[in-house]
Length: 292
Image 1 (spheres, rainbow, N blue to C red):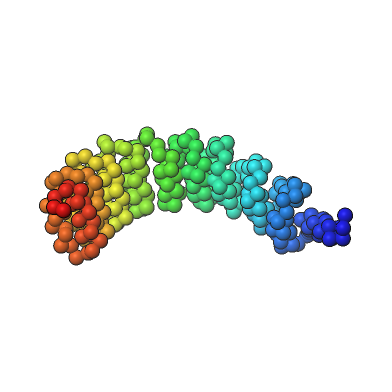
Image 2: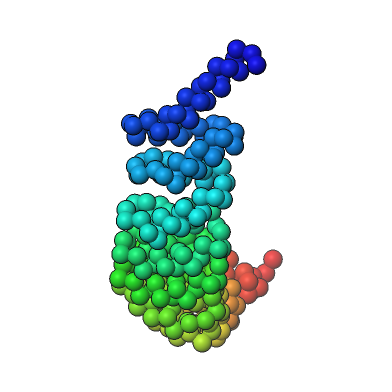
C-alpha cells in the first residue's frame, strides 16, 4: 500500500470515529463527508448511526444520505420512527421519505399515520400514499377528506387523483362544497377522471362558484364528461367576467361540438381579450363553418 492510500485510509478511519463525536455538528459534517464514499463499510456505519442516533439533525442528515444511496434498509427504521417516535419532525420526515422511496409494503403503516395528532405527519402521509400508488390506500384517503385541516384534505384529494378511483363518488361530491377552493377544484377534476357522468349536475352547480379556479376546474370536468346537458351551462360561462373562464368555456364547447354553441362562439370573436378571441376561433374551426 503506497503512502497516498495509507493517508486516505487514515482519513476514512477518522471519519468513522467522528461519527461518534460528542459534538453533534461534527457528526452532521461527518455524515455528509461519508456520502462521497461508496464503500460498504461507510454505508453500514451510516446505517448503524441511523438506528442509534438521538440528535434530530444528525438523524435527518443520515437518513437523507442513505435515501440518496437507495439503501432499502432504511425503510424499517423509518416505519418505526413514523409510528413510535415522539418527535413530530422525525415522524413527518419519515412519512415524506417513505413516499420518496415508494415501497408498496409501507402502505399500511402510512395509512395509520393519517390519524397522527401532528398536522405535518398527516399532510406528508397523505402525500406519500399518492406517490406510492397502492390502490389499497383509496379508502383511507377518502376518509382523510373529512380531516379538520384544509391542507390534509387537499393532499388527500391530490393523491386520490393519482390513484384514479372509480368508487365512492358521493364523498367527492361532498368535497365540491368544501370551504377551501383548492379542495373544491381538485374534487371536480377527480370526478371527471372517474368518468362520473351521473354527477354532471353537481359540476354544473359550481360553475357559479365565487372562485375562478373552481369555475375553471368545473369547465375542465364538464368538457371531459361531455353530453348535451353541459352545453347551455358552458354557453352561459362565455359571459363570465373573467377572461380565463370565458376562454376555457370556449375551448370546452369546441371540444363538445354541439351546433348550439356556434352563434355564442361567433359573438365571442369580438371579445376584448385576445386569448378569448383565439379560443373562440379555434373552437369554431372544429365546426368547419369557415371556407378555406
